[in-house]
Length: 304
Image 1 (spheres, helix red, strand yellow):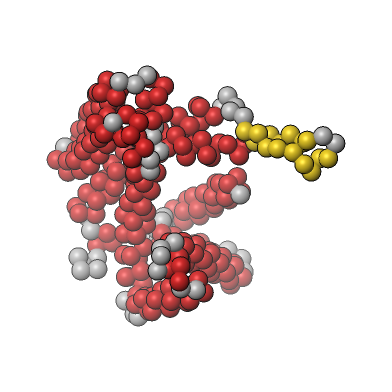
Image 2 (cartoon, rainbow, N blue to C red):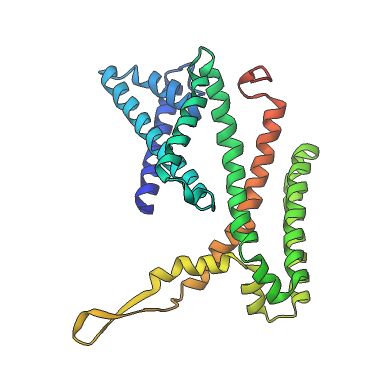
């Protein structure tokens, strides 16, 4: 499934960039519509209008967008319903009723896009949700997986001080440096990024010294706490070996072996989730925020 999803996204990249390049080649006034609603509802229809049998192709595009919206609705409703049913109160409510209520609220609030100013409002909502909400969601997911999960276990293993030094050294430096460097020193962002990683190295050394643990234990229980367990859980199914018991091939045991690639994978994946991805996305969030302040999106009235 992962390979299919990535391959499909890779293939779609050719369709997007070839379409945009074609529009620029013919000097189309909508060649700058390269993302979001502008790409789907302006750039693609404009390019299709120059093709043979445009009505056929626009019908296929409409069906594609409809199915994309439909499966997105499935994922949003199911994800929200799962969170609700995991609560003590939500367990007492039938899942079908929860889905009905969520779909009803979604349909009700979607009516605002059906008025004559709906396209403008949709464009604004699409921009700010796609940029800020998705970036914040990625940061919060990494925060939950890398810094909240197993936090108490790390404090018990190495003490509260080494773990808190890592947390405060990371988030206490990341948030201020990202926004201060973008707004106060836009031409010197590289130095702020370098300063951030210097602070991290100092925090790692201080945490290791304060923990009084061996390097391996500190690495597993403090430096990569949380993501180490998750990385191990991800890799374990790939290391499962089925050993039959006797002549009956349906009876046996499953053993988990630790392959050579497991530790490098855990380090790479865990370090990216816990340390690198929030760093990169936080700076991207700050850059996007600065751009939208200096040049309001779409030159719309600020109230939009």
